[in-house]
Amino acid sequence: MPKRIGVYPGTFDPITRGHLDIIERGLGLFDLLIVAVAENLTKTPLFDVNERVELIGQEIKKYKNVRVESFNSLLIDYLRKKKAKTVLRGLRVISDFEYEFQMALINRKLDPGIETVFMMTSENYAPVSSRFIKEIARLKGDVSAFVTPNVAKRLKEKYELIDKGLIKNHGL
Ligand code: ADP
Image 1 (tube, rainbow, N blue to C red):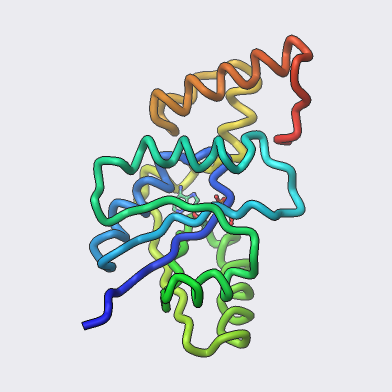
Image 2: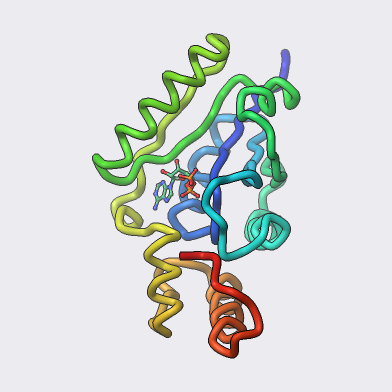
């Protein structure tokens, strides 16, 4: 039997407990789940693609059927290359729906063989988004409920460098 390979694409800037919850619940659906970090985006992330991959790598090393990679092509082409047929996405709030719905339809038009599967957030993580977490971290708030200790530490370090003017804040 061919392996069932799922791809969970996103920006992951940075990975949150909400993303990890989707990964944990999603991995039961596939023989292999690839977390695919989008490199080539119009928005400039706070963490560069290698940092985002590394942060995810540390969180997923405990699972043997999850892997992290970056990609900078069309998602559909990336799936073909990986011989994957399923895109995994998470839904938090109603406002996620419109964007996700459009993207799923467009991907289906581009390749009718690709199916998008949505997982509802766990209610604890409904308000968790990378954008708000960055805002809290920038203002020196406590993000420990939303990200792992390692990610919280990296956020703190990043904003310290920004505060000192050593790097530019691209993340907002
Ligand atoms: P993108 O920029 O592609 O939306 P994100 O990194 O923000 O990437 O999110 C990747 C995917 O994870 C999206 O499908 C998003 O809806 C989902 N997601 C993000 N946060 C959560 C959460 N707290 N609960 C469930 N799904 C989430």
